[in-house]
Length: 225
Image (cartoon, rainbow, N blue to C red; front, side, top):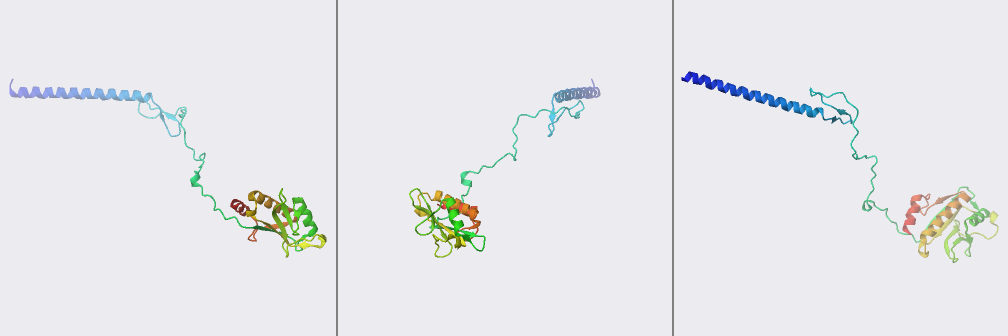
């Protein structure tokens, strides 16, 4: 065999080998694509909305089918979340020192003030007693004074006669927490008594700063006891 014929044989053999490799590669890729399509046919893909899609033979999504039931997962709903602070997160309100004397006032809405007869009747309703110092007092089970009520006008006493001609522009209530066994309980009674008298006598309650008594002031003083 001369050199020219040998060259032709080598080239032809190379072409045959190359064609065989290309054919084998084409068949392998086709088989792989077919397996992939078979896989997609058996699978469903979920949109964020929860509806499922299937892939057709051309690789395109088919029309949406019935929604797939969502998996049993827990999703966090911030509207349902309630922040419960730890005890260390809550800053307690500042505690005020208990005053030596708690003094509130009840001022008459009318210019003439409270009439003596009306006062005695109202004091009887809330259980206040007329004492030796000529003021009205709240007495405990041992006949000891829890708090007292005086007239706003000096000398602060109430007459024991001619009550129909006596008028008082306002009342002064006072209690001494340090002298009491249960100051908070007495303070609660103290506040309730003043509020009842304000209704009976039509008066305005002022705190120890001569300002309208508020719930915040009551709570602050009670906490200090």
